[in-house]
Length: 252
Image (cartoon, rainbow, N blue to C red; front, side):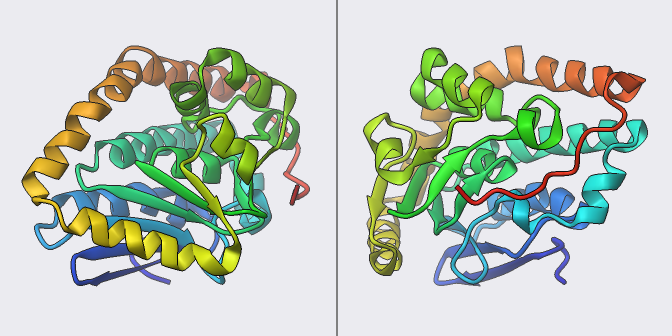
């Protein structure tokens, strides 16, 4: 296990790769720290986020004991604060970020991590969803309520976040949720080509372009997102839902 929990990081030729191998308490805290490390390093030019063994992040990869402990009010408050850090540091990273999503896909927190990236490239058999309501009986406090509407608008976001709808990779492209869907065996090559394109630009100009574009999401995060996260954390910590169900696993 690395200093980022179950996240293996590698820096080679300016490319900082984050490979997520599961989710527990150390990893939940480590995601934000890894993005922050990439942001602060002068050697990092591009960030690629993916999963170990050609995956990404979904609740079947969660540590069950950590999920159960998170139901305790004090732990729930801490988890919501960590989620706030994840969204702030992923969006605030001024280096270009790419999510490389293999099947089964990016679900729950995995969807938020992917959608916080600048580019999302997925295998055509991957899916995207945020099953907080059915899986954990809590609202999407890890940034989903901010990130989904920022990409596809409020009307479509309601359909996914309030009905537990699952989105296939091609549909995700069609509605503007992600950038590209390709066969799984072509995904590495497509991401490598994008990395090379980004590396060809002047880093200062590229990073500033990203910063300017992200000011819209940052504005929403500052005016809406943090208030939502804190309100949800307080609500849950007060015992309004002291015993949410442990996620049973979902691979749609």
